[in-house]
Image 1 (cartoon, rainbow, N blue to C red):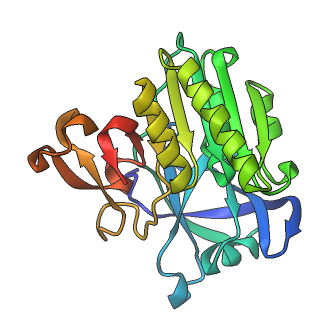
Image 2: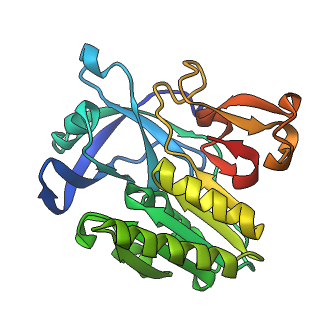
Length: 272
């Protein structure tokens, strides 16, 4: 089946994580299994309720946590109308899903790998650590503002070492970023993967360029279609693997859709 084909999947359950903090709530959404030949960690799906409401015409992108023969699991945070609608789903409801979309994370079995996640950016790493051939070589630094029980950290900790860093103040954030910089320096000869808010990814990119660490950034760019048709998620990236060291030559860079050319870009080849 084409990855662009829309499938109707059934909600199996919707599990809240932690207690809501104000209007902020987190959920694991488990759906009936999609008819895919394969998928890889770092890819995503577009999803929308299948009730045909005009305000729900556009889907919302979600990283794939994991897929089994019995289900597909997505993890999301309520942040607007689309995710609010998803948070009201009941078992038996149907949703429209298309995917798996985008490229995927690099996997190097014999290479020490550093995972850097900020907030909801933890979601794609669930599948990554559980499918990795050498999870004992993985270390994760996780920065979060909500209580730790709001995130699926335990399932990652089953396979890899995770250090959680609570951010409650600007000082906490600076301490976390200092730790991220040290870890990137330590993994300069390894592999670094990062997912989280754009300001966080910019800092990861800066450190990665400083220490010449091979780093992939999973961009959390707004998307509407997920298949490259709407041109709403473009970023500036190097043609043919050109790095940022040559960004002055406009002929070496072009605007690329995050949904079809990403969402994972090498840190030295993207400007965002």
